[in-house]
Length: 233
Figure 1 (tube, helix red, strand yellow):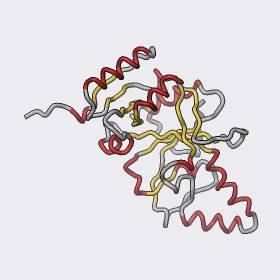
Figure 2 (cartoon, one colour; figure 1 turned 60 degrees about the horizontal axis):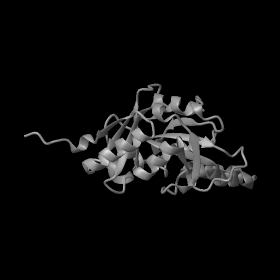
Figure 3 (tube, one colour; figure 1 turned 180 degrees about the horizontal axis):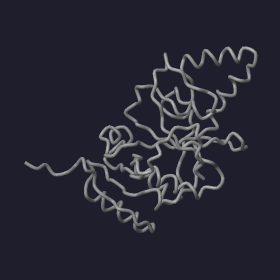
């Protein structure tokens, strides 16, 4: 279930195009389970995930001086927050293909913020919040901590190219022990508008993906990446 909140920044335009770049195995796991995988926040490659900038940390240390559990809470909280990352862009991103697909057999899911919201409505066990990531200077700029989600909606400026939209769930109110992440229910046909095949893949791979998607009962448009279009001279 998607829940909106005024504390989290998100464009009001539901038509914004978003992408998820992934390999074939993860894509098939999504189709077979009809679930979206959300990674535990402290398992991301960026060690700063869910942490604070220096100005914010200095303020928190003052508060924690008389209440040590205050800082301990934020440290342990990262284990209870799960995230699904999406890239906002009107067009395909060459950089995203390079970073998130390890070989020529990757693919990209194209959706919109509106489709993502509707696709999440089927999930009844965990609430999801969708927000835009803010990119800041962690040495100079302040991250608010009035809302426990805020540390997960800020990243260093070095990651601006990601243009990230995040789906976030907090399961700290449950007794669930999360290892790598959590799967939530999602309506696949609602979530995925198009599938784009890796620009360097062979035609047999596109045919294979088309056959698998069809056999699993989905009707989703599948196209070869626009980055591999014929050169016109």
